[in-house]
Length: 423
Ligand code: EPZ
Image (cartoon, rainbow, N blue to C red; front, side):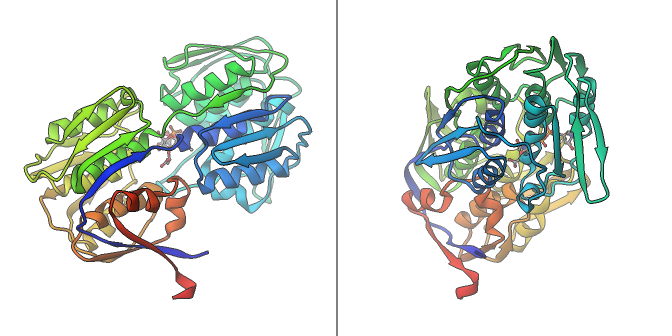
């Protein structure tokens, strides 16, 4: 269904919002389940279209997948390893985790290239180098699929040229059932890596060092079912921090792990946002008009997450002075800038940087989400703007934000969804 989100800006928000389970954990945890020989239950699963897409792919592999509210139960015991050439594969980036998981479990996988948001080039060479280091061979066919296979996988020492989240998780998935010891050096340290390692450990894997830059995996023969609660989504929480700081009066953001948000919280404090940070929640007292500009540089964890760069830009439009934003992870992740200019934002962008001049009174416009976090940023901008904003390409937003319109409506926002074909 083609939909757009229509937002009447300028309303003050107040109340409590509960953050959902982390999208970027969930999309790795679901493929990881196929390594087990018995059912795994995931709790706190967000209701987002990336989960639906992965459920379709797992069912295609003959796994039984059942969803009960926020619980997903997957029984992978009758897995059939067929080539994954379904159109769903290129709907999301995270389909690449099925390569590591199927290689680990069956020692062979054939599938199409993964899709996902366009953020500039997104190669998977580090994943492939990792699989090859474990003894796999990779071949490409003319029909756009590739096959990764091995007679058996043997543990090895793998140095990642960049601390890639995807490569770290994918190599972990392949290595948990390899023979012997695998050491991933310069591994990513994001909380989602720790979440995946916690699930694998409950399934019987032997892994040390998650959350550091060296992860050691002792291969095991079999893995079994378990229960696992997904960590809260730090990117959704950061998006609500931005929204509360701009149009909130008093907004309580529940189900957060503040340590996962330290870089963002310290940036918000520097800007002048008033917050009370508790053990599992953050109260934001927004609506101040004396916010100060700052400079932001995205970094791997624990730095400011690239996934929050676009939403943070909206806050900068409300700060006094010129802020500089440097994107070091995805240098082309600036699809939101053109859209925000249509809403009156003063932004200049060049190569991997943009400069935001504020404060600016944004105004409603017809805009399009060019990717998931651009969509979230446009929602945040529309809530501030004078007048009505119509946001197209809503499917990007639905890939990663559970019920975002309803969560905002419950805080007092005026939002509706329109089926474009019915207009
Ligand atoms: C994950 O992408 C997230 N996606 C992204 O979130 C997030 O922006 C990114 O990590 C960084 O935190 C999922 O978890 C599904 P990377 P991933 O490998 O794993 C380069 C969102 O909005 N690179 O850490 O693909 C790459 O091009 C999404 O929720 C290689 O060159 O990110 C990029 O410049 C978007 N070769 C950098 O490393 C490789 O083989 C970081 O990528 C792999 C990556």
